[in-house]
Length: 344
Ligand code: GAL
Image 1 (spheres, rainbow, N blue to C red):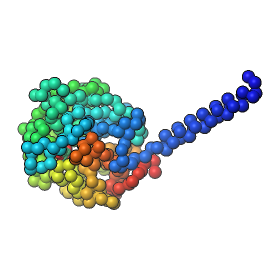
Image 2: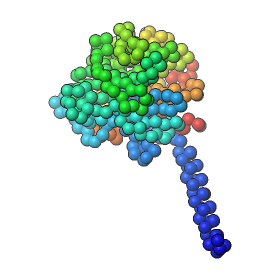
Image 3: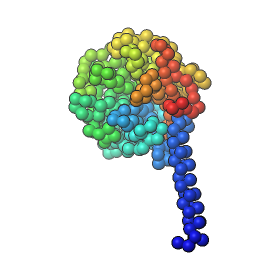
Image 4: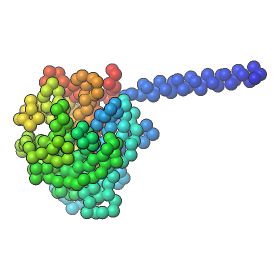
C-alpha cells in the first residue's frame, strides 16, 4: 500500500485501540456500588429485583427479586394502612461474577396470567423470593411470600428448578406449621439444614421454621421469636458461630429503624442489640428496609447488607441500597456510603 494511505490507516487503528483500551479500563473502574441510584443491568435497563436475595453458586451470584412493573395503585377498600401495589410480575433473576455488573437471566418464576384462582396470578402478591440449593435432591429451591391483594392470605409458596436461574416450577403454598407467613427469608446453615424465618401471627411474632431435608416443607420444629414485637423484613447471617437477624419494624412501605438480634443457636433466644445502621439517616435505615445479608465469597468478615428503598407511589422505581456490613467483636456495623467498592 502507498505510504500516503498507510499513515491515516495506522493512525485510525491506533485511535481505535486507544479508545478500546480506555473504555475497557473505564468498565473495570465502574465496579462501584451507588446506593439509591438507578442501577442498570449490563444492557442498560434498570434492575427489577425488589425484596430480593442472592444465591452464590459455583462462582456466580444470582440475584432474585420481585418484578414490580408498570402502574402502582392503592387498594382503596383497605383503609387501615396504605396498601399500594403493582401487578405481581413474578420473580426475576440476574447473574454476576463481580456483584457490580448484572445480566438479566429472565423471569425465574413467571406469574400466571390467566387463572385468577392461582396463587401466582398477577392480581396476587409475590414477594421476598429467596433461593437455596439442596445438595441431596440437586434442586434449587425458592420460597416466596404469597398473598392476596389485601394481604389476608399470608402464605409461603415453594418452587423448584434444576438450574439456578430457572425457570422455576411452582409447587403450591401453605401456612408453615399452620401459622401465617408474610415477610420471609431462607437461611441455609453450614450443616446443610435450612430454615425459613417469617413474620407470623399477623406480623406480631416471627417464626423460625426448620425445613425438611429436601427444603420443600417445614419439618414441624419451630421457634417463636420477637414475640409481640412486630418485626418484619428478616435477613439472617451467621458469624463466628452466632446467628444474627436483621429486621425492620412494621410500617408498611414506610421506613423505620432497623434492629439486629443475636443468638448462639438458630432456634435459640434472640437478644436484641439495637440498630446497626450508622451514619447519615441510619435512624431511618437510610429510608429503606432490610431484605438480605450477603457474605462476600472468599472474603472473611466481609458482608453486604441489602435493603430496598421503596417508592410506595411508584414501586417500580424503588431503589436498592447495598452497604458494607462488618462485625466488630459481636457488634454488627453498617455504614452509609454514597458510593463504595469491595476492593477499597
Ligand atoms: C412491608 C413489607 C413489604 C411489603 C409491604 C406492603 O411491610 O416488608 O415486603 O409487603 O409491607 O405494604
